[in-house]
Length: 553
Image (cartoon, rainbow, N blue to C red; front, side, top):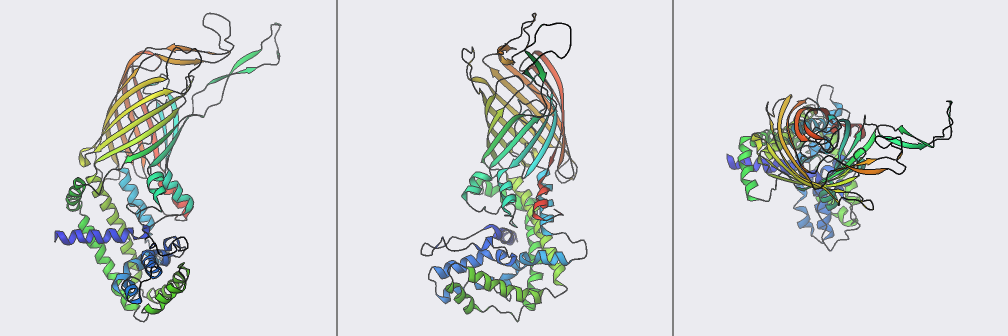
């Protein structure tokens, strides 16, 4: 029985991921001319794209009719092997006709992924540690899928509290949204190429803006507006607007949560299959698929695929256009008859929901089998009245599954530019930090709570540098500083910070972090400090529905 369960899971995974896979064309074929059936606009051609790619590649490679006919069972609707792709190709048609509360497959899949994502402990949605308004003492290794927004108030290493808005996004998800590439497989499917898989997918970008932190600027004056004195004033210091960009962060995941190639992962995966009921979900999915298969093969009995003709069509046009048109005509004729069966609609709807349920259980199993995470982070930081810095950070995390996650940070901060005659070097500081996170209420509930305990150590070789803008009056005098200056503020040495944080996770991917921290000093001021931080973040992954037309995602 265990072997059957594992085989069933493998079959279900193959079914879910068939949409995102394409086959290469043999070297003898004119690869630059052959179309990719998976990029076709017609749902039926996309659903069967793997088999169509195989057929066209085989014909272009010189395969005989006997050799090409071996794989045509997957394209013949009278054969059981073609039923799984038939469900994918017709699900939108069936669900559009439904008058009941049937939920579309994409909406079910989207909701399942959001629920699974809400339980993740590795997401970084707030700004970096050295930003005013942050609630995070440690940077996490993961990020949001599409887009998230966080509003935070407080400070951890800064002297001045701030209110900061942070936008996070994933480069691959934005690319898919713009190009309209939205495969049915959402977890394990391959991308459209190496650039997407190795550059876009691991890359996350965020921007932080200070919403309530004012700054000043010196402006030239043109004369007195009123007053009895005749003393001329050549310049004045005025407050400038709020909403200033305070930092940009780019993150690249060097190591994912799991490595399916490793022996350790395979062992954990086999244990997770049983523990998380993946096999049961796979068997349920296969049972519903078999119900559809019986109806499709029976109703399509008069539409046997003309195998000689489809092979001849593929040979007549090496680009694949003729083959795509031939199959689309064949499928349209057959599916019109099959879909007239009143009992097939509910079966297809059930299969799509079972697919989404299987995907969620399978994703949970991957979380259980997860191991190391390794991320590189670059921060462009613009603190108020201080020099611009470039921060480079390495993030390592280990997921203990039900026992929580442990995250380590190691970073160095460099000043952007060094003015002539400066008495400080390029190195701003170096720091190490760690955080332990654990879900308190359990990941299976819609409302969750997360406990986080963090510690931070930073060492500065010189005191912090404060930029004093031009026009500022020197302390104890009425003499304005014409060109501005820089001064050392605070002390060099170690900065220690500890934090306890409680995060409320509500429905719809809303998170509310509430934290209390203690530090022995801040970047500019000496003396211990106890402070509070609070924020709110929301994951806007469902925004994709506004662009793709899936309003119920």
